Image (cartoon, rainbow, N blue to C red; front, top):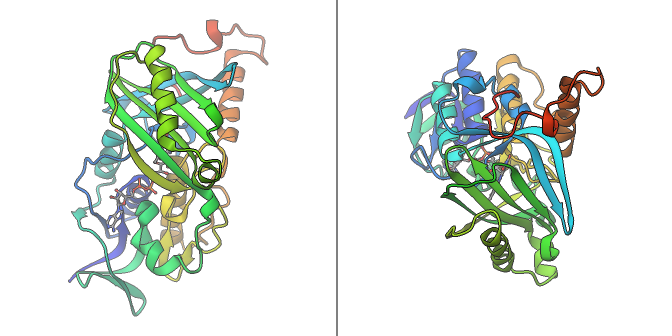
Length: 344
Ligand SMILES: Cc1cc2nc3c(=O)[nH]c(=O)nc-3n(C[C@H](O)[C@H](O)[C@H](O)COP(=O)(O)OP(=O)(O)OC[C@H]3O[C@@H](n4cnc5c(N)ncnc54)[C@H](O)[C@@H]3O)c2cc1C
């Protein structure tokens, strides 16, 4: 039986961040993931400046595709609003593998099934023993299922269903577009370009409201594909896949003795935009801190809404561009269009 101080189930952003923080503090950590990395993760791959900061990322030395948006283009019916703020896109295929590698933690490919308590710690599948256990296995995390589900059931009305596809495509419009409530969708659809000719498009909505309203997500996908075909991505071909996850509800119990849940395992995606990478990372930082420093594991500073981050970025940009100080602003309200910006 293999023993370690901290066993982390799942090597997504939550798992790799916890591993990185714990390794830096000298802990003996093992990450288990059922997939071999790099692995596909359905996700638009939009990340915020907070993510960059929490990960201590130097954007100039990130070795994979990273595109910085000087604005988000938000559409509500006939209303089209450019929102000047700095956001980024990455490819999860690359980003997740990079984070894991950077953590320096050993990774084993293993599909976790059985978790049993063992004195002060846990035994996993009769093969691994640990004192601390971090559940970072996403929506279907076995740590959540075994130790937390009964205490912390997920609210059906917060379940999001999605369809998405990431394709190689020589896009011409390098802005990120979001269409809210299009054709009655209780959610939004997106066009997220990635650096060097990759594009992620998708639709996501609240499952229960879609069902109640008689919506079929495939119809919404068809609307999006038609829109993109006529405008932003003519000639693109898609074969979308579906995935579901949960927006943040009441997460009363996120720690039981030496076991923690983080990220999607705890259901932490923001209520307004379904942003889950930032909350996964921040919650993992807090779980690692709780283990290393003995602090309480609290999610108070794990954001439940993305609009605050966007507003902070808008304000930061306005300040930098001199709106309040009287200095000249960059044409177009921000970094020059067409450049790959690295500022946060
Ligand atoms: C279509 C779509 C688009 C999205 N777009 C965005 C976006 O643009 N920006 C954003 O911030 N968020 C987005 N999200 C949400 C975001 O993808 C998640 O919130 C985020 O990935 C959560 O990270 P995590 O580390 O908690 O879980 P995950 O990234 O899901 O990682 C969990 C890991 O656990 C592993 N695992 C699962 N079960 C087991 C097991 N039994 N044994 C071992 N390993 C296991 C999995 O293989 C996986 O590698 C999107 C989600 C979807 C579905």
